[in-house]
Image (cartoon, rainbow, N blue to C red):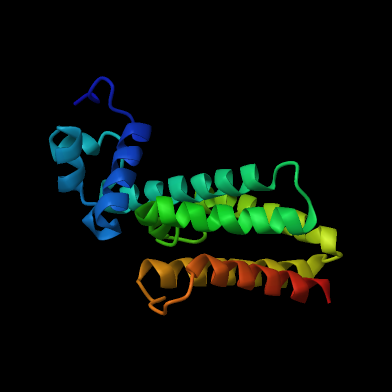
Length: 186
């Protein structure tokens, strides 16, 4: 059976991302995707290897989109401005694309070459920015992990509705970023 004209992997993954953003990652199934695309579920198998293949492609797309957000934010910036901009970009991505953001943590195999390469681009970008603070080698990796933990922790708690206090969430986020910046300068 030949693939439907106009249907390609990019179209499939973008449709899956729309479902994930609207209804959550768990709502992304071959049945919901085929309904959205107005095709029969078997047609998807011309482009993906079942639901695990779709989830991998969605994770890869999410990681690549996050990298684009971060790269644009860091472009032509340095030091504190670059770190702040990347933090804001990360949180913006998680807020605008909640299902796709969740998909970035759904990996079938962290040793998967495509996932690994896409993830390394983000790590290398953050390390490059943090090297401006004199962080190199393992210290740059530790700082990168710390930055990611702050960003992911905040975004995940926010997505789950965990910030219920009557205090501006964005102020808390900026406080965290400024605290991180003070820490890496020591």
